Length: 333
Ligand code: GLA
Image 1 (cartoon, rainbow, N blue to C red):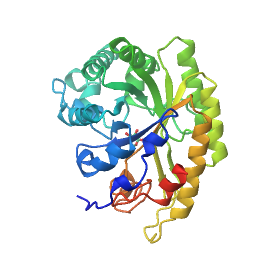
Image 2: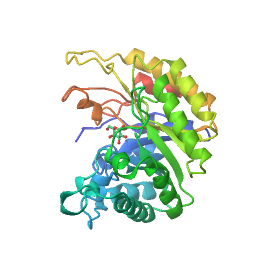
Image 3: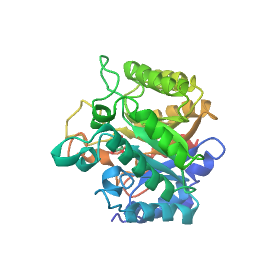
Image 4: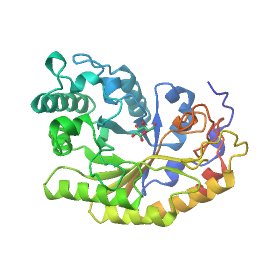
């Protein structure tokens, strides 16, 4: 556990600064709600389980749900008066194999998989009804390349394209008050952006209960450009749905950069980028309803192991010891 000595009383609160504009969220784990507890309470008014509500974690076997870890996060949020974003109900990753298996080693049949999806959504969404105000119902269903619309996955193979609409319908039926999101990455790439736009438009045209688009925001200090981010926000907003930045982090490395010898992180460049991005987000107040970071401080980030295992990264507003970085001060100006 980090040896945190910084007194958060010395600085103003990030979420209070943005109150009335949008929520400020952080992805958390059952460990970080303790190791980063002081920081989270002070600066964030919303939390998301980094992994603990994903299918494999919460429903590892057909008749076994493991709610303890997710419950501990929701309990923390309720106790501290924080909102909770649920993440995620239907995804091609971190989903156990049994979900897609039928009898005698054959793949599940369409009706069987739909029934499993419905039951999973019913049980998970019902458990947190009234506590989780928003769900990433479907995560990353769009293919990155231009040729194909939907990502190849077992959900798609077995159920067909309507697995997406069905997931939203089931979630809405269980919690009609929950705000339901489609969430994806590479959301500013023009090719993928148009595909996400078309998917959500077609869901809306069919009357599917979808209320928002989650832009993950796994970006870096060099890209995407502000113009690309703006174009994506404008395009998605033209659908009349709300937007959230759901997994924001600004890596010190471009995605293709696999070097391991970066000694000096570019704190200055990161701070400039964060400031410009938040200025942009603020222009869309009323449309962007929350900005959630995929972590809270540099001592805990998935980027330490992705895309290069064991390579330290510094993507957030607070450093390893939770001291506010220049990125924080720029946003608070
Ligand atoms: C995707 C998922 C998240 C998380 C990140 C990496 O963006 O939506 O749940 O797994 O990848 O940590």
